[in-house]
Structures are given as C-alpha cells and as structure tokens.
Amino acid sequence: MNKHSHRLMDTTTASRTNISVSPISRFKIALCQLRVTNDKANNLNRARNMLEEAANKGAKLVVLPEMWLCPYSHEYFEKCGEELNTEESSATYHMLSEISSIHQITIVGGSIPERRNGQMYNTCCVFGPDGKLKAKHSKLHLFDYYEASGDVSFRESDSFTAGDTPTIVHTDVGCIGIGICHDIRFPELGMLYRAKGADLIIYPAAFNMSTGMALWELETKARAIDNQMFVAVCSPSRDSAGSYTIWGHSMLVGPSGEVKAKAEHGEEIVFAEINYAENQLQSLPEVMAVGALEGMRNMLPVTQ
Image (tube, rainbow, N blue to C red; front, side, top):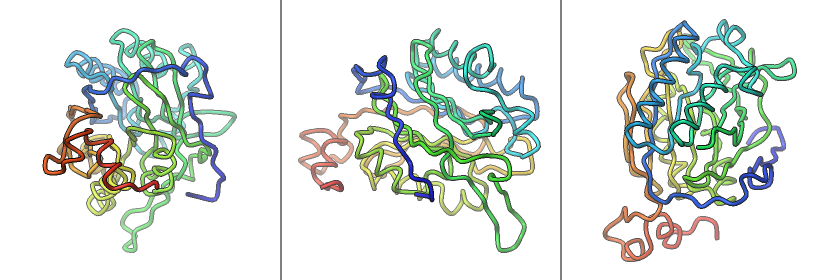
C-alpha cells in the first residue's frame, strides 16, 4: 500500500452498536454526480437536494463524490474545511445525519476537507438510517501528480495529511469498504476488504481528464474482478468549478467486471440495483445455482 503500516478500522469491533446487522441483499444504489461550485452553502444545499431526490426514488444507499463541498483546489480546502465531530461543529455532519435519518437511508458522504488536530484530511463520513455516524475514512494515498508535459500537476500533500486506517463498515445494505480516489490504485486495500468480508467497495473520487481517460474504468473493473465484489466510483461532474478538470462518469461495476450503470460527464444521479444473490452470468451453471457473488467466488476462487 504505502509506507504506513495500516490498521483496519472495522466497525464490528470499533462500535458495539454496529455488531448485529442483517443486510438487505437487494437494493437500489444512487451515485450523485454533483456539479461543484465556488459557493460552499450552495454546494451543501444542492447535495441535500440530490440526496433527497435519490431517496425519494427508492435508493437505500446514496453516495456523494470526492470534494463535493468545494472545488478541488488548495485555496478552497482550508476555507471550506470543517471539524467532522458533531452536528454543532459541522454543517455537513448535520445535513448528512438529518437526511439519512429522515429518509432512513445509508449515506456514504463523499469527502470534504476535515480539520483535525491542527491538520487537514480528505475525509469521508458514513451515516446509517438512524442518522448516526457509522465510520470516517481519511484518504490513505494522497494524489501527487505530474504530467511529463508539465501541463497538469497537483500535490494533495501540500494541503492534506494522509490517513492511516483502512475502513470497513457493516451496514443494513451489506459490508462496505471505503476508499477515496487514489486509494483505488492500490489493490492491496481492496484485497484487505475482501478478506474481511466486504460485499461492496465505494470510492468517492475526482480523476482528472488524463487519469480518467486512461484509468477510471480500468481500475474500477480491476478492483471488482480482483476481489469478486461490487465496486462503485462517484465523481463530481466535469463542469465543476476550478482549474482542475474532472473526468466524471460515475459508475457501478459488478463482481465479474460488468458495468451495471454509468454516468456521462454532466451532473446527474446514477441509479442501479445491487443484488448480492443475482445471476449475472447465465451460461455458468454454478453461478446460476448459487447467485453471482457467491458463484463467482466458488467458481474462480482468488483467496484460496
């Protein structure tokens, strides 16, 4: 992974309230490909509207993109950062908690700049249907990027401190591993989540035009096939504010690498069904007998 020796934050041991969970095996997921503006309050309100729209259309799991609260730009990270501790300390915390509770949905809240102990982190919060914070994940692998042409470069490490704890959270819609953007480039993280029983990995992300064209779909499919699980990536829209041009194309990929749903590059909500017992490969008798997720793992074991 990286130079850190990571320990796994598994909410089955980290929080007693999450020990007993009976996951829904079939549900609708919504990926909110939000257009990010220069106005933090506007972004917060528009994210609320998208979450509510997704919930009203039947989604039980709703995902926001990486850095949806502000443009992906150093000048905004400090300006828009929040302490993600309580509803009183964070407008974002309050909104995500409120919407998840009102609509009784699980929210993977993308990521925002988090102020913590004098440092800044790129952090994702997960809220359950009861409105309670179930987990926080801070980006493990910071994106320091340089193009040979010199046209594009960006160093997250100039603003953020790397997290050191992989995060897996047990929810009513299954066991979810959390990564943020560049975390997807490190297959060991997905393998760790697979070994811990994850059904789904979610990566809020903001690839640029170069990395997006080359790697976005490839990496998403690779992590799904590597680990035989569902993988979702959720991006801001391409017309978001700032000089960093974002790829878009939020998507859900199934455990055999098939694209279940995919956005274009504009603002939209992508809906898809996740069915942990569905038959995705009709020609394979074993998969037909036991369902795609279990069948793929039995037929082509990668952990034995």
